[in-house]
Image (cartoon, rainbow, N blue to C red; front, top):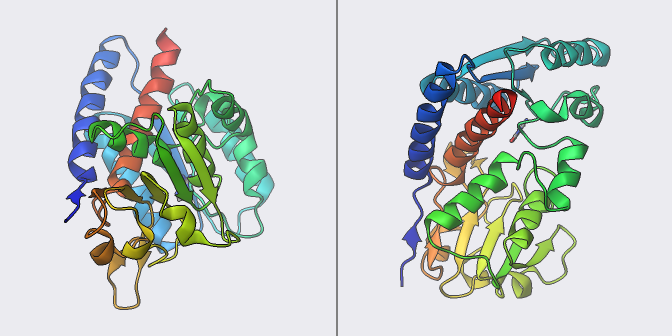
Length: 283
Ligand code: GUN
């Protein structure tokens, strides 16, 4: 059996098209949704991500600003930039690209963002709202995964969902969204004793570890839906996920490719969150 390939690029394009239509409607009411992306330092991957986010905004008719700051900026200066954006009525969403240089405290910076503009959903208030089942913003990557499952008619209700990787950005919010959707959730981390025993139980397997080849075909239940959140650049220049695609696709029922799977969905959901933030200003 060869798995169905889940086309995240096509789904993301249709979501972006829907966002563009809703942005056009909002503009007739005098509001242009605005996103500010704060980028500190010169990490090449972050520069690419940020450029892609801004380009997606422009294409969908949103206003976007990239605020590029020197890698040596002080915490106080960065906080002052965030406070200005909190007070800027043209800006509905604020995203501080992570990781930050080591001398900056990302927790303090994220808490400084107004929770109503925290389109990443990383602010502690938004994490709490998500945990208690009343989310304001769902973190973009897990939100995108939920949209993919919905589009593929894969229902989490009553399903065994196993997540590998317990980060604040993906694993933990993913667990909350799947739990809220009725799945029985197992959240694995780097200390999990027998990882394969866990992953083999999964009807829905989400892998987000940042380690290529973390999961292979032997670790997958036949027919499972496999969502690969990883994006890793190999020394030979190839871009691969955390799942060994060739062996996994022979066992899984459906699988996301890398690239062209979860990545484009993250950006699409950032636009959705920014649109929702702007809509709240008119309602
Ligand atoms: N770095 C990697 N992924 C993300 C993300 O989704 N948001 C932010 N702010 N930084 C990231």
